[in-house]
Length: 359
Image (cartoon, rainbow, N blue to C red; front, side, top):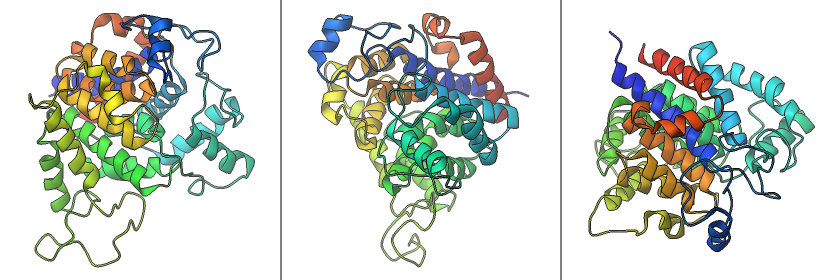
């Protein structure tokens, strides 16, 4: 029998991420919050059109940035292949996506091409390197914004999830910290799709799997029954990480977010506490805080992500997926779903992946 609650959560994660992306298309990358408020008022509550001269000029309210385009490309590969197929994903980048960009920032679908994609384009297209030799050192969440779809598809098998997420991340980003934090995010999302909560216990639930050998993180650095395997304290291959700190940190952030003695008010100031820039060590903590604090309120979670300014698009995508997984697509306000460009087509695509994951 189909687990309809599972499919609701899986669909909610995917649609929640697409909505988060589109909500930030207009007010993306305002690092001066006074300028943001002047442009869009004291509180952004829905989809907006980018102002002239901004990064996504030419897009309409509800349309996706390039992050949303790449997320949808990943979703289509998953849906049509029925599982993660790296060769198919790479083929789609080669034939369906790279011909639409030129390796410069302000060109291509969605209005802006991220640093990691520009680096991969240069290595793959300009220099002709094979896949596997195409990753750069960008420290952004770009990979996380697409591999979240893989995490949803593999939610029932966290071992496969970790392997596929880390492998896909390594196609465009080679930094071990980026890989570890991106994989940790994907694992958390997978547990939420299964029905877990994003709270201070999320670390314990993941560390149990690490100690059981199901996840590619070292569990301890001391002698004893949980000792790390023999060998150097470094990643040996994509997805095998030298410490579990990426898993431990998320639980501590979540615990603080729901601790009444620890408050960030108003909640959008999470961007000022953890930082507005694009790097993973700014974006993941902010998303974790908002997901834990607003675990049952998708609207509050994503709107506080958007209204914090800076790299609010990544913050809203990551937050939107986490909270979308907890509330399900049934818990996302209809105005957000109906205002999303091609919402019926994308909802059907998300539901197809959710059904495959459930099966």
